[in-house]
Length: 328
Length: 192
Image (cartoon, rainbow over all chains, first blue to last red; front, top):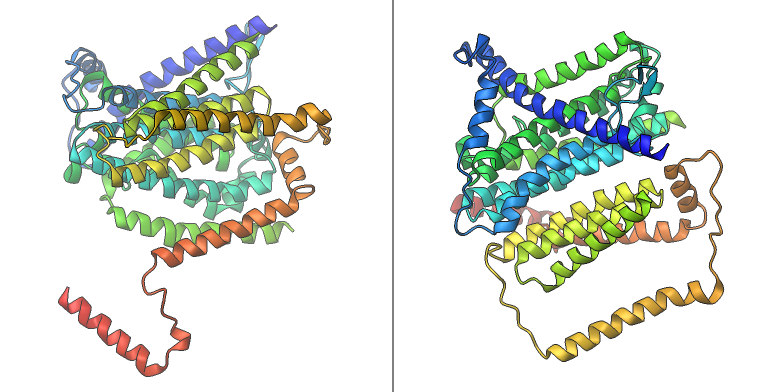
C-alpha cells in the first residue's frame, strides 16, 4: 500500500511539474498575443503557424545562452535565488486540487498531491516564501537596481501577506475549514452557493493582493522596466533568469486556481462539466492578469504601501468583524 | 520508514543551516541559512501530524526573517564580509557550551523527573486547527490574552517611536498654541 502511494505521488508530482513548466512557456505566448491585440499590434507571427513555435525558440535561446555569474556577487546566494522562486511555486501546488477525482483504468485518482487539512495556509505561506527569490537575487547581485528591487520585494512581502491572510479569514470563518476541498464542497450546490456572493469584499481584496504577491502590473514594482531595469533579474542570464520566469508564471496559474477554488465554486459537484468550469475560471483569471497589464500603468511604491495599510487593511478588518457579527 | 528518512534528513539540514548561520561572517549567508533553518523546522511539525503549527511556522518565521533582511540592507553592504570583533574565544566557547547544556537540562529535567504525559487527549472528529483553538481558548486562555496585551503595548510603543510630534498633546494645548504650531509647519513646508 505504502509503495503504491509513493509511486502515485511521484507520478503526480512529475505530471504537475511538466504541465505547469510547459504552461509557463505557453503563458508567455498568450501574454504577448493578448497584449499585442489590445495594443493593435500583431505579436509573434514569424516562427511557426501564428507564431506558436516562438515558445520553443525562446526555450532554446534560454537554455543555450552563456551562463554568466558576475564578479562581485555573493556566489551561492546568487545561484540559489532563482531555484527558490521556481521551487516554492511548485511546492505551493502540492495542496491544490486541480481537478475533481476521476477513475482511470479502474483506479481512482485524486489530482492533489497532498490533501492536508490546512491547504490554504500552506499555499499562502509557501507562495510568500517565493518572494525570497527576488529578495536574495537582488541582495546578492551587487547592483544598485537589484538592491532597490530587493527592498521593494521585502516591503511588498511584509505588507501584502497581511492582506491575503485577513481577506481569506472571513470565508474561512464561514466554511469552518482551511482545506480547499472543504471549500469546494461548501460551494458544490451551484452558482448561487459561491462564496463570491456572500463575501464580495474579501474576494476583491484577495484579488488585489494576488496581483501584489505575484508581482504583476499594476504592482510590478520589483522588476519595473522603466525605473529599475529588470530589478532583481538585471544581473541574471540564460536559464537562471528563465527559472525566475517559470516561477512567476507558475505562480500566476496557481493563484488563479486558488481564487477559483476559494471564491468561485471550484469544480462544483465534481462532474466533467464542473472540471471544465474550473479550467474556464482559471483561464479567465489568467486572462485578467494580462488584461490588467495592457490597461493599467504601474503605481509608485509609496502608493502601494498607502493602499495596503490605509485602505485595504482597515476594509479587511471591518469585513471580518461584520462577518463575525452576522454569523453570531 | 519514510518518516525516519524524512526526520533524519531534516534534522541534518536544520542543524547544518543553523551551524552556517552562527559561523559565517557573510551577513547574507547568515540570514539566508537562518531563514532556511526556520522553514526546515516546520518539517518536524508536519512529520508529527501538527499540520497547522507547521504552516504557521513557515508563515511567521519567513516574515520575521524578512524583517531582518530589511535591517541587513540598511546596516551592511551585504555583498562584503562583516569584520567581527572577537574577544577571548575560549570564554565565548565555554559560555555558549554551558548555556546550551543548561537549556537542555532545564527542558529535559521535568520530562524525565515526573513522566510528563499528554493530558489533553485528541478530541474525536476535531481537526488539527480546531484542536489548537480549543486548547488555546480553555487551558491557555490567560497566557494567550496576556500575549495579546503585550503585542498591543509593543505596537503602541512602535507607533509612538516612529511617529512625528508624538511628544505633543493637542488636548493639553490651548487654541493659540495649536494655531502657532500650524503656522510653523506651513513655513517649514515653504522653506523645504
